[in-house]
Image 1 (cartoon, chains in turn purple, green):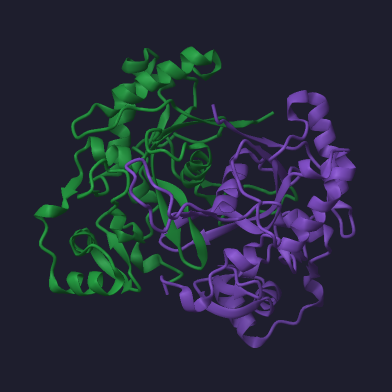
Image 2: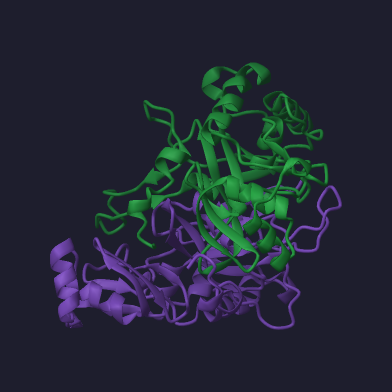
Length: 263
Length: 263
């Protein structure tokens, strides 16, 4: 039967700028496979890697002691008990600010993501005054990891796992965050089931499933709550990778502003 | 290691109004356990049941041949090649219409859900002119199924699986639908990690994870694309059910309008 299995890779060392994340991931997977032979790489495996781990390895860190906040950041921070320097970084990372009130900033990033604090995060950075920014190009980050895994894992290139960079986003109308995809490699982020007859032979409209986002949410369920296990193996999902061009969250999932039906 | 496993239950018969859905689910689970002993019920199992199956069993069906559309439904349907009778039903199921353009209706339902077409769905209903509505009280639907499962499965009450009623919702800013929870029983839909120190000992703010929604998305990944397999077993998720009162999506996940930060 079509079972999906979700297993975190063993803990990685604390990740520092310049670290070879692909090599650390491969080493953790070797460990996992040594512990359980069933978990050696297989065709159509997916690795979900948290944004935080990628940002650290890529050096997307800001030392808040170097930041001079603008007056509105200081005012906001004072009012809502926030760190004005961090608010300043959030504003710098935003191309459009949608909400700036009640201590929360909702904005659009240069990638087109709409999220809290422009993805700037202070937790689990290893140092008090350091925050992480989102990777510059999460699709590219995913590709860079994926491209190196076959050699590191000693597997043929066509067995290379798909790689998804994940982050936790809030959403309107519902409390709670869900993990979604910031970048992908080796997997189309959407599955288009339009024009597929349903069980009654009726043609279904607009059934485009955000499969990469769902995989990130599944991965989150199994992820250790510790930041030391930023990589989760998801096996058994049927996905596509048939495109001639590279798949991309930024190009395929992010909605152009003019198409935003909820706006 | 903390593995999450996601397995669809075997196909159910076509569900009709008045069917005993809990009994059909239990029978499918017996079949699954007979095929694989490992998949017999265990503590902390979660069953994800699609809204469509619940709505059919509860008779939440509308025969479109009985519906007279209002003028604005007819105009909209004409312009966008929709079924005016179905548009009429969508408007009747909406307490607030957020968007009514380009062939798509985004509205708020009486439950407080914001989604396309107020959850009214024509696919997989088994008949051309029949549409399904959302259950009146999806939390109650989940409880009714859950309460009957111990007897039907011949297990102690404290082994009763959690039950989540799922549906596929679009969201702003990103293409693609994700499955989320409409109702829950035996599981708190949110996990509050606030005030939990992270790996650096820093207190994390606003890390409330929509665990029931993430479980629904994980379930969707393993669900057969056929409507005949509307129930998925999710095993291995750490969740809470410690509340004195019954957990509820409507009460705990749906955001009061005045708190909607994205609005």
